[in-house]
Image 1 (cartoon, rainbow, N blue to C red):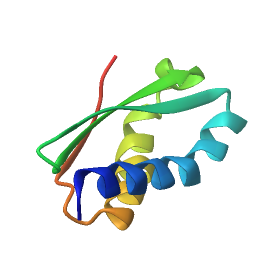
Image 2 (cartoon, one colour):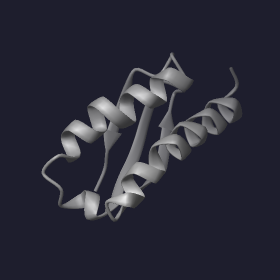
Image 3 (cartoon, one colour):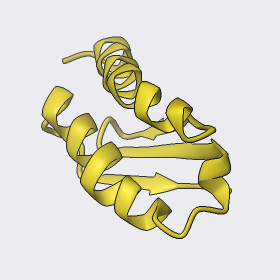
Length: 79
């Protein structure tokens, strides 16, 4: 998979997650892909102060991104 395909698939994954975040007043943005294995995203809006954001990152965001791009090793939220 090329870097561009990885980016497109991550954006598709975020598109799957985004409606759930939007319904709670939040959003998510792709910030950076490092070595085609590590992803940095930014939770935005209400998600920045939500006490469930760690669970959202692990159970929602990371799982969904890895479903679309299995070679991804880590997904990190940056503030």
